[in-house]
Image (tube, rainbow, N blue to C red; front, top):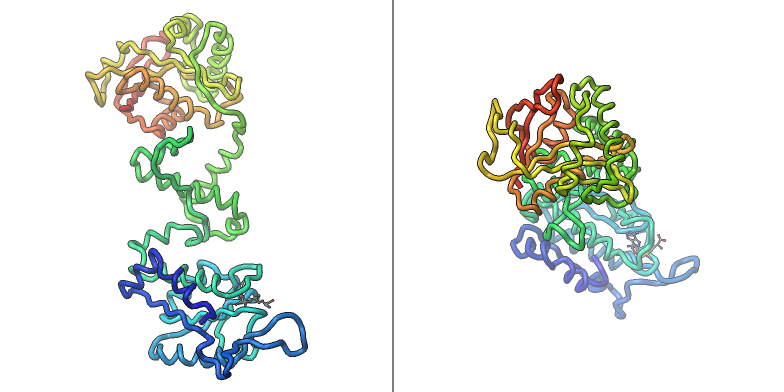
Length: 422
Ligand SMILES: C[S@@+](CC[C@H](N)C(=O)[O-])C[C@H]1O[C@@H](n2cnc3c(N)ncnc32)[C@H](O)[C@@H]1O
């Protein structure tokens, strides 16, 4: 019920709702209140008793209009709603309730200074507000309610998932969405969304929902039910992430130079201490030394990861096949005969442990391998190095089998081998 039916009709008969109405799934009628006046001037409003600014909509045309609307909806469960800044805030929960409990909604749009209170008292079932602000009329609010309710009517959207995964459905905001192209103005779509691993994608999406609801709507986050084991696990992950060193500078990757050797060896020493603390018998002898890095640097196969200008990590990417990989046991390579390069001698500076920089490092290694024309990248890690194994797997590598390395005589030579096709 409105003084501007053609405007409202035009908006509500566009796009998705328009198509649903054309198919008969929903029916939206916009009724002119003025058609129900009983005075010659078709006047719908008058001055307020007691004085004051503006005019108030009269009860008579509103009541007559409402009677007409209700008489055409006999047998339906109707609800008369007055859109008002004094109403209860309209939410997704309200939309769900209205869709569930009624099959006919009458939305009354006020204008001017509002409507005669006696109409509200005697005819209105509930008042709804679009928010704590004042509009010139109820039309925008009525259109918002209509849109939010109608899209929940079965058949209006193609699938229930269209709305159950969206913001506000379960008290959280939706995860970020991306579409083509994969790179836009130097900005990339998160890697996890590109690999088709649906379990990982839903893990990432749920985590993003929690992160962004907490950041954008702490009030909603406080009230959300996050008691499921999955959400509890994600909350622990988020807390761990928050305790990390914030990466405030851009990350980059460049080939290492001879001058970088001291900082590279200091990163190796940091990594050695971490491995010792975790009782992992890797890098516990002299390997890797400056002599191991020098040829890599000379061949342009050693790279530094920088946080701003500061070296944060190092890796080497051997182009030559690894003898030990030929003797893989308990599995087989994905591309046994194709050329591959090998990622090894990965180390982070102590300051950057747990900063999330290691994922960036792995992606840079892939990038370098790809740009050198390799169709696959391989790596190995000590069988007890669970953190490295988890990182490698999370970046899309798959476990291929076991190898024995000879670079650290006198230490545990068992390594798990991984491969990723590029
Ligand atoms: C200018 S407003 C009247 C406001 C009224 N005098 C008051 O202060 O409560 C005119 C009409 O706009 C609609 N309206 C204004 N703000 C609204 C809101 N936040 N939500 C829903 N409807 C609103 C109502 O239908 C109202 O009758």
